[in-house]
Image (cartoon, rainbow, N blue to C red; front, side, top):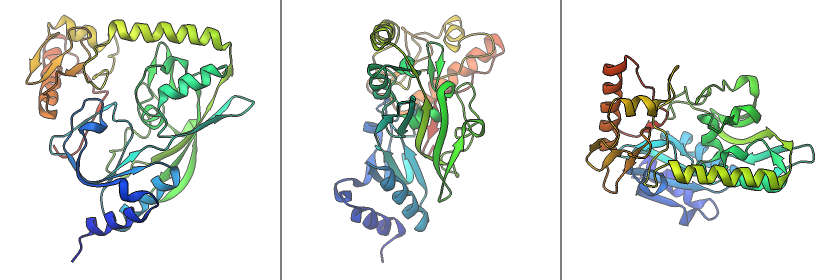
Length: 309
């Protein structure tokens, strides 16, 4: 007798092109910037918004837990992996109307959006050049850099919420420092799935934007480690950047297994090539406890821990 997972896999394979995009017991490490993560019971790659909706609906129909994973740039996936279905969101595409309203699919790379809109003379997301995540992931965490934030120009988000497609306007999105209404809902417990978003951009000189973006890209090369990571691990505190406190606690370079507090940037915990999720998690907890003991400040995670811990 086929299990619910078997039946779900069979249905997903029937989606046009699905035969090549459905995988059982697939490691998730290749789909995260940490290059860490155990297997998912079932993985499906959605390349269009209708496919993303259909896959989620099928998981719900068969009673299988479902996690939507963007570009894996702000997550740490457990070594034991993820139970249920993981949908890889590869839904991409964007357009800007004459008034500067950008409509973009949630799986589109944020860096590509920055490059494309700037080249067409639209400002508002140029600060995100070099950020490796997807638009959907950037909205979840209200990504920001160089004084700009997603929430500054985000106008509305279309979501799949418990099977219903609806549009949420800016005041409903709960955008705050590195957070949103999406991030406060556990990603396996009813978090709305972001399908599409609209942003309000403004006209600007494309050559000026490109020069500024080149400077920011060089800034990243000069200051950020090149080993696999998920970017900044902790949020800024009320008074200080997390990296400053970590450095003052003499934790730069601290190692646990294959994980290390980067000697280049103390708020990055990097994978030296052999790190497990437990290495990273153990090291971030050591960092958090040491900083709290030294300075009385409890660092708050910016990245999300997902899977079976």
